[in-house]
Every structure is written in structure tokens, then in C-alpha cells.
Image 1: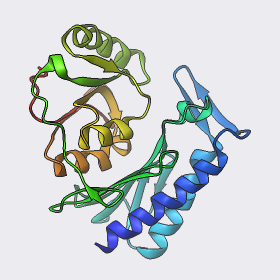
Image 2: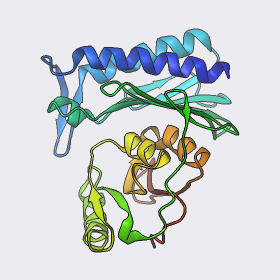
Image 3: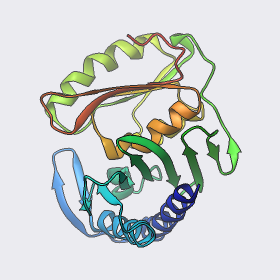
Length: 246
């Protein structure tokens, strides 16, 4: 429980920073064809790192904005300090902080915080997950025709080309497809039943580690497969476990 409480503290602290910086002038550190890197990403991870590693100095941290500590440590924090950076940059209020703790490779703690809606999803392996202190579970919908599914197209030509046929197929089979711009929030939304599934062709561990625990703790299913052509990227299908998605 101590690990979970510190993860929540770190997520709230980073979220406060993001909320204060939202819709203010921003410093861009780098741009690519389908992504943006902001100074605030780094500042948020620094805030998270300070809280986590001051409390647990023997732990390692693996984050989108860099790694800290001995990565062979039994305890590894997996952090995305701002998931939905493009949304943040364009003033779209849909982004979050994602923090997970792995122990010898298994995700044991997961926290996702949306600072705009002030929603905190938190979970620990073996315990019911909570949204702002209240238990939640995945949806009960079992038919694709009733389902809302998020399809991610990621950031590379390969993942976009892999995702487009799936989007073309799903848009005819489900009630609605969505592309919302934050993988971690997609996972949180699947976990609490707002979405019925989330599918992405090339995603990083820091985007989905916390949500992975939350979806499974809420009764859902997560299928992950490493991409052989893209190091440290995964194909993922997260769902309520009731839909026939293949």
C-alpha cells in the first residue's frame, strides 16, 4: 500500500504542474511528423522522479523522458509524465499522468491521473481498483454493435499503415470508433467501462503499464505482443474481455 500511496502523491503533484501550465505559453523541445516534445514533459517527470526516488532510492525509473537508477533493480517505476502531449499543446483538455511499479517484471501498482477532470484511477495487484476512491469495473457489453472502441494509429508510418485497415473494419462493426490521443486514458476508460476496447499497433510500455494493471484488476483482458520490427514497442488489445475482436 505504501508504494501505491506514493505513486498517487507523485501523479497528483505532476498533474498540478500540468494543470497550471495548460493553455499557457509552452517551450517546444522537439517536433516530429506525428509528435511533439515539450519542456513541461521533462519538468513533470522530474517532479515524479524526485518524489518516487527520494522515498525509494534503491528503485529504478523507466520513463518517456529518460531513465534513472539501476534498471536491473527488482523495483522499476514506469512513467509517462504527460500522455497526450499533442492534445496538451493544442489546448485539447484530454491528457494524463501515468505511473506504474513493476516488481521483477510484473506490474504491481498502477495510477493514472487526469488533472483537468480531477480523476484519479489507482490500483494494486490483488485489490479492487478505485476511481476517486470508488470501485469500478469494465463494461458488460458483449456485442460489437453496441461497443465503443478506441483505435490508436501511433506515430510511425508502419503503425499507421497497420492501424488503418483495422479502423476501416471496426468502424463498420461497432457503434462508434474513437481516436482520443492518450493511450493511458484509453486504458483507464476501458477499465471503468466508458470504452469497451482499445487497440494499438505500436505503443510503449510507459503508455500502458498502469492501465494494464487497472484493466485486469477491473475484470478486463489485456493482450500484448512485442513488435519484432520496432524495439520496445508492443501491439495491444485491451478490452472488457467479452467482445470478439479478432
